[in-house]
Image (cartoon, rainbow, N blue to C red):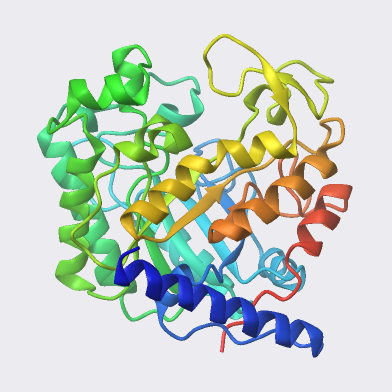
Amino acid sequence: MTLTSALRRSSLALACLAALACVEGGESPSCPVDEFALWTSGSLRGANLMQARNPDGPETGFGDLAFAQSDFDALAAAGANYVHISHGGILAEEAPYAVDPAAMENLDRLIAMAERAGLYVGIAFRSGPGRNEESLSYGERIVDQAIFRDEEAQKAWATMLGLTALRYRDSATVVGYSVMVEPNAYGAFGHPGPDEFIARVRGTLADVNRLHALATAAIREFDPVTPVLLEPDGYAGVSFLATLEVSTDSRTVYTVHDFAPFYYTQQLVEGLPWPGEYDLDWDGRTEWADASALSDGLEPVRRFASARGVPVAVTEFGVRRHAPDAAAYLAARIPLHGALGSWAIWLWQPAGSWDSFSLQEASALRTVFEENLRGTCRRP
């Protein structure tokens, strides 16, 4: 074990002891003051907001419904201390990649509401120069993934992160800049496995490590403190985590998304059960999926964190509310993520949202979510 790894483990242990003491005393502990310590101690727990570009949506042009202060207050009242804002980029998707005032205004508004609710914020960009929302959601427009083959688009994406750092570097609310939501260059190569993919693209524009280095440098030009969050290719999949290069930046967190078993959590066939037989590793063979299998599936994350002495977090996971035994699934999953580090569930949308992942409406899932937020530290 490296000295850095030992110190981080000690930090996590102390944070856990403090949390337990405060829970027993009936009060939530105060969170660490240092932003990076929030991640190394696994102190951040909360949910994602999805604010994709949507010209057919509310007046803001983002999301399906506009957020109100009451939506953030409700998340804080549930016990969360963190919101991961999955947002359209503040630069345009097409050249010359101009600043998007509407995106800036909407992001400012969301961060201000989170601050008033006492929540920390992570900023995660879904789209921007050379990448449109269809790259993730597959809407009616043609998918644009030029960022993985166009150097100018990639430089502009890094510039977008630099501008974001300049804008929010003095914010006590913003505690992380996520370079890109779910990189997925591997789709253009026929969805190969992680080893084959990285061997084919290493060092090229399709290697997300290259984008990460550019974006990190752009961020650090303006903000030397706020943590940088990096996701692997493969839609931030656990199996692709090992393809990430460890950054030379010492205040970096490595994050994954995990919706396994995908067929169940998405209910691709209505009524699929939990637990049940699923192809967990996409090898064409089904395995018995239960709480033990979920834990086994996160082993690559544990190995990555231990071997490299770096903090990790699960910044997206979830299950549709109508999935059979969804509450039991979530009750098995959340503690696994808490043992790894910080976490943010998918999804917390405005009150009245139709989205079946949203937890704001009363449900058995909402109850499990709140139970796992007990003892969460509060902003000092």
